[in-house]
Length: 124
Image 1 (tube, one colour):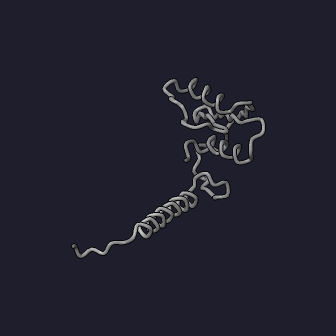
Image 2 (cartoon, one colour):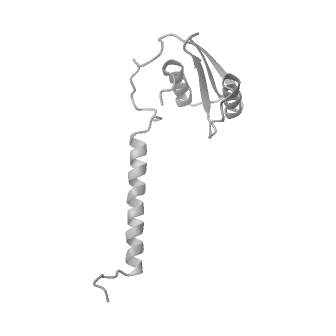
Image 3 (cartoon, rainbow, N blue to C red):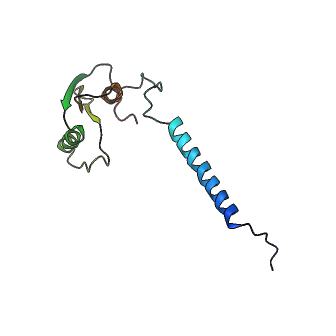
């Protein structure tokens, strides 16, 4: 017989569950702490492409469908978002024009998030 001490199956399961829970909480905590999408997190507003932009705000019934269509129209190589966006923005730094697409009842966060794209481009 070897010199190893064997633990009971129940003890091993408890250790595995505890380890999994610890890893899960570390991952979730890190993700929440570093979220680029936190509406209350301050950001550097000096990093922008322009301080002026002609913004058009389009209200639609199905923002995900309209955003996908607009993205494909502007960028034929576009292969899809991979998720259903609640809103989107398309900007042109040369012409200083930006199109924001949202639902007819967006949140303040939806609108602010997309407006930030107008001024800061791909910021996340």
